[in-house]
Image (cartoon, rainbow, N blue to C red; front, side, top):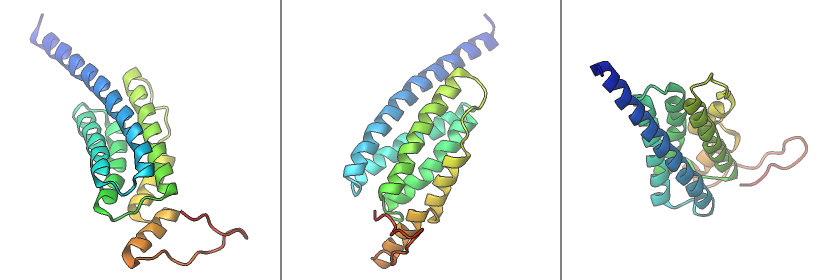
Length: 165
């Protein structure tokens, strides 16, 4: 066997191990997100979730799985602000995080199958960026609440009062 053949075999083994580890991390992220819904002020739990996303981001980037790495980086940005207390979790932000985990699962499957990029990441990425920037509808309110200690006055939309978080 040539040196190149050995290197390819080693790389396949590394990728296979990453896929197994990523599945385990995503399963834990999913379970931890459910816990976070009930314990949104648990900094240790937020740090665990952040580390899981960080591991997937870093390793997938190292292996050249750019879509997976770039998407996870967007998640990581939001998770970092949550753990720093720059964003306060509410039901809508939690929904974005849960949707992100589902997207992450799909991206991992897409990466495993080595198929075409079938998942449209634009909608969820724009939600993550909006949460990160404080422009997501409820994220803006959560940032305002964090800055001023109280939520901004409720505004009516479409003749109905807004949902409270």
